[in-house]
Length: 313
Image (cartoon, rainbow, N blue to C red; front, side):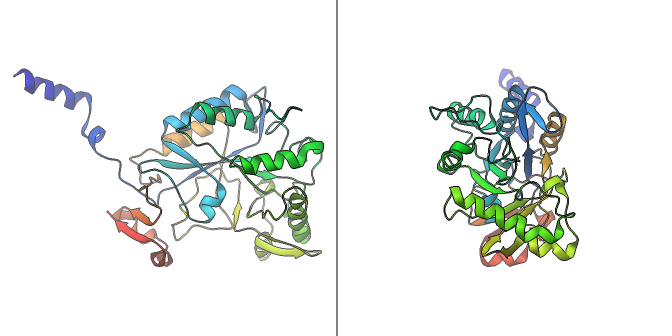
C-alpha cells in the first residue's frame, strides 16, 4: 500500500510531461535578440549591466544555446539535443559594447566584458554574439570608440569567437539613401578590411529597420563601389518578431526577423518559446538531419532533402 501511495504521489508531483523527452522541432522559430547600448538605465535601446546579466541567466535557464549569424546563414544549427538556439546581436558598434583598457583588459561594465566573464563562469553556456558595426560613424560608434586600438579590438573579437557584420557605413537610412546603397555597403566592407585583412561582412542589419523600395533589394545583398565588392547572405530587419527556421520554405534571406532587447519584451518571447509549442525550434542534436513534427511537414524547404536527412515524427 505504501509503495502504491508513493507512486501516486510522484505522479501527482511530476506530471507525465516531466518524464517524456522533449521532441525535436527544427521548423520552429528562433529568437534573434537585437541589443544596442549598455548603460545606467533600462530603456528601449539600453540595458543596465545587471539587466543584461539577468538576460543571460534567463536564457541559460530557458535551455537556449547561443549561435552566431553565420550559423543561421550556413544552416549549421549546432545545438545539443533538446536545446533551443538563440542569437545575440549588437547594433552600432558603440563604446558601451566593447571598451578595452590600456593593459588589454576589458571594462567589466561593457557588453563584451560582461559576456566574457559570464562565459568563464558558465562554461556550459558557450556565449557568442554578432556585432553589426558602423565603420564610418562618429564617436562613440566608430568601431567601438577607441580609434587608436581599433585593430587590436577587432582582432580580439574574431580571436575570441565573436563575429562582425554590417550596419552600413554610418547608419544611413537606406530608403532615403537608396541611390547610395553600394557606396554605404562597400565602404563599410573596405574600412573593416583596414583592420581585418580579408574578412568578409556576410550579413547586414538595416538601420532603423527601414528598407528601400523592393527594386533595390538586390543591392542590399551584393554590389561593387570603386573596386570594392560586398556580399551579404542575410539581411536582418527590426520587426520585433521571431525568425523562421532556416529550414522553413518561407524563410526570407532579405527579411530575417529580430526581437528588440528590452526587459518585458525579452521575457515575453522567452515564454512564447516554450518546449511544448509548435512555434519553438528544438534541436535534434544532429547537424546532418532535420527532425520535424508531422503537422509541419508541408513547411519544409524541399530543396534541403538533397543535403540533409529528413526525419518526420
